[in-house]
Length: 49
Image (cartoon, rainbow, N blue to C red; front, side):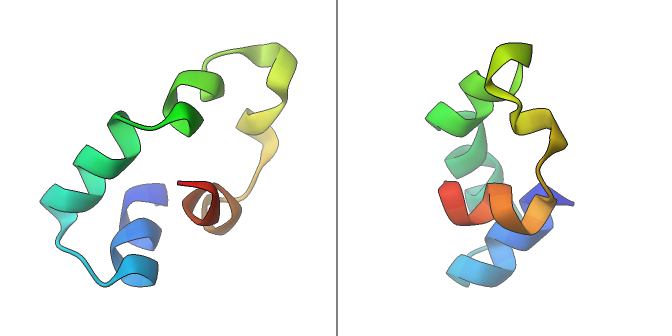
């Protein structure tokens, strides 16, 4: 859902959205439970990329 939201918000292809997300600090921080990012809505995560 986050990838789709990035593609929509940034008006890019899904491939580009995947690249943007997986190479972002947000993706890195998402796996760290202490950040709490795993509780954020996909729309909010997309805005942070």
